[in-house]
Image (cartoon, rainbow, N blue to C red; front, side, top):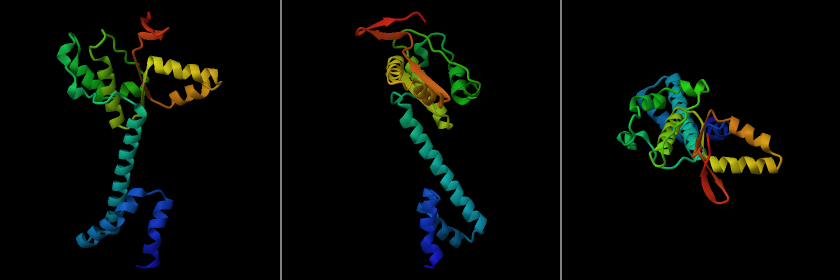
Length: 186
């Protein structure tokens, strides 16, 4: 190995190209075997790096999101709710212009019909396209904002929320008061 080959992993680490570090030798062997041009080799490494970063970003978004697990549109029983437009729900899941336009989506219905499941499913579809989402129950969000206000950090908490293009706020019609749940007029 020459000095350039020895120092390459250190340079890649400094540049924070983790997928390059893992794959450059394997891809180099393939490039030599298949007689790739240098730009083809570089392009393949860039493609691997970008895919790796996308996967890591999505994993980070999913972790941040804190959605209830196992909530996907494929597992939702659309027949359980009369009048629910399945095509419209899938359109919202596939076309995210409504997020870019800053539109709100409100899901109303009786307890247990699947509002959280639908909201979580839409959140997952947003994450899959690289849109960062955060899930809160309304009581958890109120508690967090109340604590931030008491510690004089409310603006910081609001700024943190503002970084998310989409917030999913669950159980908006209910708040806890003195240990009991009461429906609020919304």
